[in-house]
Length: 158
Image (cartoon, rainbow, N blue to C red; front, side, top):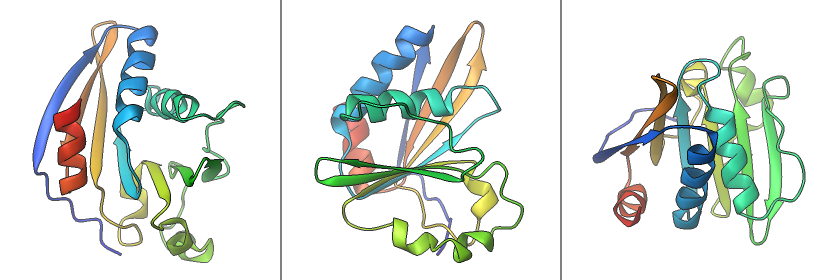
């Protein structure tokens, strides 16, 4: 699997606080389709997991949405699709992904969020959408980059 990213289009959002992040997550969730691979980039504490949590809750998950920092992946079964939230921060060697059966996570009915995708380089499929989150004053700046036609359509609908 290749991690090569070809960015088709980009757009930027300013999120002033946690409520704005939740509202953005809801807005983004409304446009998501499967299959889709979403890379999330940003420093520790920037809000990658918070964004995923908001999306997963909006899509119908009623329970806790835990950070997969220690488990590498947290799965969620919602309606007719499966969601996998990966956090590869603690991944020591990308080859570990092969041992956990990484290819089985990417199917037609899946939505896959991958934090720290560079740690899995060479073992992950390319992203449809990349989300870069950075600190900006007291809030966050979110940059979306479409890497597929599906993600480009998603950005246009936002």
